[in-house]
Image (cartoon, rainbow, N blue to C red; front, side, top):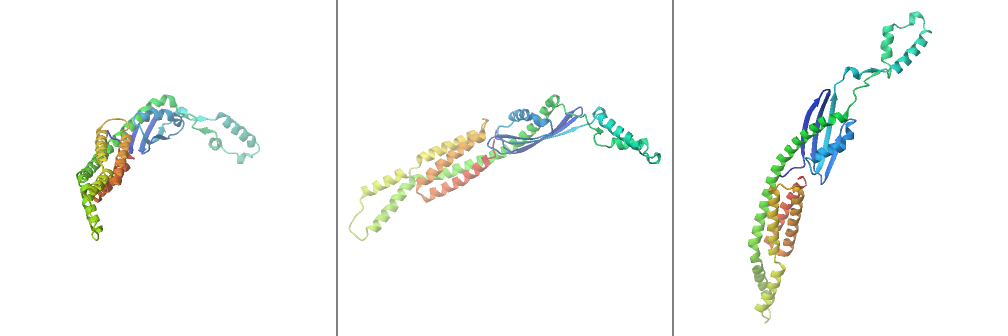
Amino acid sequence: MLLSMTGFGESRGGAAALAYRFEVRSVNNRHLKLNLRAPEPYGLFEAEFEKVVRRFVRRGTILIQLRIDRQSRGEDFRLNKVALQSYVRQIADAWGGLESSNRPTLESMLQGVLALPGVTGEQGNTADAESEWPILEAGLADALTRLQAMRADEGGRMATQLEAWRNEIMGHVDVVRDRQPTVAAGFRDRLRERVKNLLADNAAQLRDEDLAREVALYADRSDIAEEIVRLDSHLAQFGEVLRGNDDSIGRKLEFVAQEMGRETNTMGAKAGDIEISRQVVAIKAVLEKIREMLQNVE
C-alpha cells in the first residue's frame, strides 16, 4: 500500500488527574526523524516515543506535540514553614518599634505575609512519568493510527496519479517502437538524395553497396531495441511495485524511475530521429513529475 509522507493525527484522553492531547504531523524526509515537544519530565521519554513511532512510520520527519493538563489537588498546596517563620520573626522585631496606632491588624499582617515570595506555592502537583507512560503510549498510538489513515488516503490518490503517468509513458514508448523500423529506411533515402545532389555535376556514381554499408552502420549506431525492451521491463516493474505491499515502496519506485530515466536518455542519444526525440522529451517530462511526487512517498 502506498503511503504519503505528509499527514496529521490527533488524540485526547487521560486518567485520574491527568489529561493529555497529542498532535502528530509528518513531512517528507529520506530518513526517519523525530521532533518531540513535551513538557518536563516527559521530554526524557524521547527514546520511548521513537519506539512507538517506528511501529507505524518507516521514513519522514515526525513532529509530536504533547500537551498536559493536570488537575490540582488539596495536598498539592503547601506553606513554606521556614520562609513563613523567618518573615514572622522579622515582623515581630519591627513590631516593637512601631507605635500602637501604626501597628497593622493581625488580619492585614497575615495577608501581607502570605503574599511574600516563597511562603506559598504549588509544591505538589509533580508528574509521576513512569506510571503515566502506559497511558501516554496508548494516546500516541491512537494519534499515529489517525495519522496513518490520512497518509493512506492521500497515498491512494497518489498511486492513481502515478499509474496514469506510467500509462502515459507506455503510450510514448509504443510510438517509439512503431517508429524505430522506419528510421534506417528514412536515413537511406535522405543519404541517397544528398549524395545524388553532390554528384550531379560529375560523372561519379553512388554504388548500392556503398549506400548499404553506410545505412548498416547508421542502423547499428541508432538501434534502440534493447533500450525499448529494458524500458518496457522497468515500466512493468514500476506497476508491480506500485500495486504491491512491500516495505519501502517509495525507495523502490525511486530506483525504478531512475533506471527508466537512464534508458530514456540513452534512447534519445542514439535515436537520431526527430519524432523519436519528441517522444523522448515527453517521457522525460513525465518522469520528472513522477520523481517529484515520489519524494513524498514513504
